[in-house]
Length: 363
Image 1: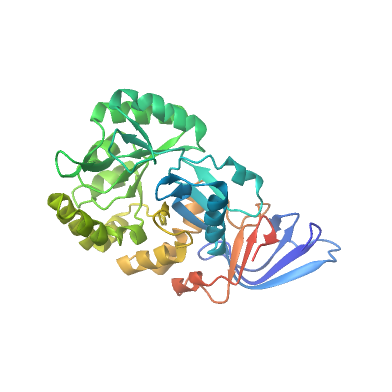
Image 2: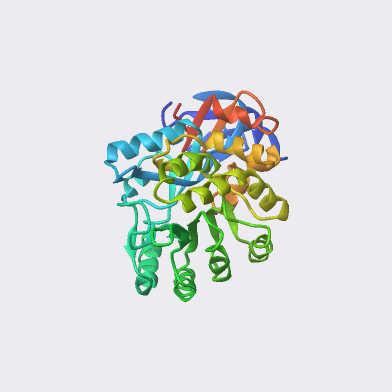
């Protein structure tokens, strides 16, 4: 397919949950719902078309031991693309992945900069590890480096306590989030446990990652403040193995992790039922493979979220939340085509027929 080829996508175009159209055209990499005049070199793709999927918690350039080489990061991004993920919110990475922006064959990335964690309170080589008095300065630094997001580590195991504990005092969090907002950035935070959430939400946080500690008494606070969650259920599935590994040294922490895992589906379903926005994120990178977006959508359905809403959490709704277009007139043609209607069975997402990125059929 050359630069002058017009792509004709026909069948069922899911421009919105209920906005179904018969066809669209791709001209010069852009979407049009009007047939181009005098089009000659036309390639036709047929099926059910969705906007390129969103993985709202993903780490390109991050491996089990920290930063990875560019060739490994490229393979990570390609694995996401093959799964139909064409927009990534990179929720923290020590790697500079700006080179991806120059590649029209790789997913688009919205960066949150590098994780910001308390000293010796996170995975080694992942984060800036600092003390509370430096939090505002580092948040400002990452707000300027990122693409409108900053990522805090809200809690982690405190070895002296032997369990999960908040990373930051309330006053430091308040000042840091205020500074990020002043600079036009939203703030999200890694949070497994219960006792970091109230201070973060009351301090103005915009999103919480994992949110396994979300309890019924905290749900109204999230709703009133409009705080979203990205549950990363495919990551939470690893909690029992982590708990087994830490049992002998940190039995209290291990028991806590098991409890969080056991109630994970109830936590997500209760959040959704109350009106908390829920979005798809896999936590790919680190120790988890890339390309798991379909599995995460299926997990949301297992938790009790209706299939159409789980689909929106990786498609129309997620793109709107991140301020990026879907299958809109004039938008970059980033879309995925399936053989069947993914609205009726989200398992369809695991087998894309074709992936179109920036108007080119890339697989």
